[in-house]
Image (cartoon, rainbow, N blue to C red; front, side):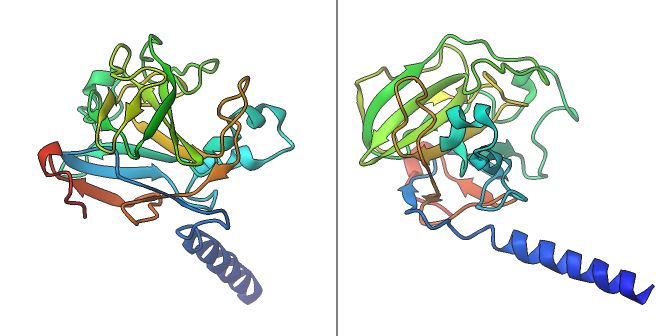
Length: 233
């Protein structure tokens, strides 16, 4: 009995240490971005450098061939919006995307750069259905310095940018939707080294800091309306 308790304690302690290590960036250089959403309370549902708090890290597994096309998302961050009571939607798990608080929220450029790719026209999915072919759904790839920043799952027909356009930090680029492989409306964002023409999301993944913070699962961010975009806490 004692041996079992000790073993369980060691296991729990090990898991806690591993999860605690998740807030810290991986060895690769972090990309500094501005938080891309304004005017609300936001919750991180995937984020960090440990698979216990960031499901995207599974795509680092080179033994799974299909992960190679999406390797760039390995340090990705998924963001939802919640109200003051921590609720994300009307109802427990509604099927219609419009029932979620974040649906239709404007998304702002987190860095200054050029639009490399802008994909629009894919439909929002009814929860819990997902598009396993066009996994990023409607999305934008921004080239910001030496890194590419991908923002995904936009509402169809909401994109305000096109390939080749230059954007400044804070420019409106689209609205949050539920297109692609999205279990419910949320904003996905990640940074990577440039991918290939055939697999644009396959570049080496890079960790991200938002306004100097390395956000992990369960972190909360409150942002003011766009006119006060300089304030962040």
